[in-house]
Image 1 (cartoon, rainbow, N blue to C red):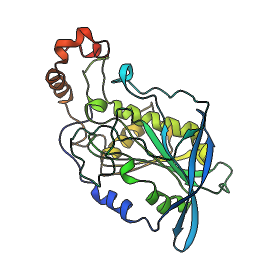
Image 2 (image 1 turned 90 degrees about the vertical axis):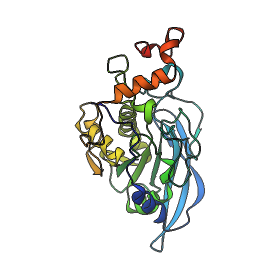
Image 3 (image 1 turned 30 degrees about the vertical axis):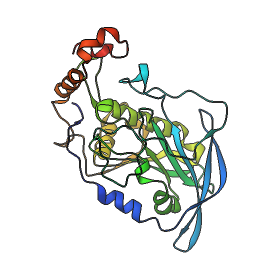
Length: 295
């Protein structure tokens, strides 16, 4: 079973518009905040929000690597945990979005920067320490976009701070490889495909192992997805590789067995793409594309 990478794009603009339009105030950064994770220290910022007449504070960490960059020899490979770092790493800006399968984004244009080096997540957490010893409950949001478009940056952090962090929730937003880079497949062990799902699983693993550093409870993690993100959440819930990484899920407008979610044409379309790129002619000279040799 392979996730579909054709030209069907589910419309989830209503969710995006809701999160974009319901930022209840203008947030402002007031100070830096340091978080010491399993991989090294991160420097984020504290944002003040005016919610229902009350000032609340959120710790915001953006562009946190949860895997090594999937480039060069790691392209078309399952994600690998990132290297540790010694210096404090800046986490005050979003990472680039993953390359979309479509040439044109249909939303607000915020995701203008794209890169293959895109496996990053963002954490928005309450500034104050949780009164509960194990920390705050955690909500992990996985964006949709037909496995072809979308990013975490398009949803920002402000609305999550206003709507959820103000209600004592830690919010995590993630990215995963899209289109052929995330879902092409050869149909054999050399290139089994669904790398975008493995990216999401790696992000959930990072959350499970590190969220306590941000004030979250790893035993109370909810995976929340919409459209293709919902199908990913469904797949993670069913897989023995990931079902123990979170406690519950919210699935909006997508399931792993939905008609639009999977396709038997992925291998055929991957073959056509390889041929169009002349990979079938030059594989012998490329270690990077060796796995495509059968094309």
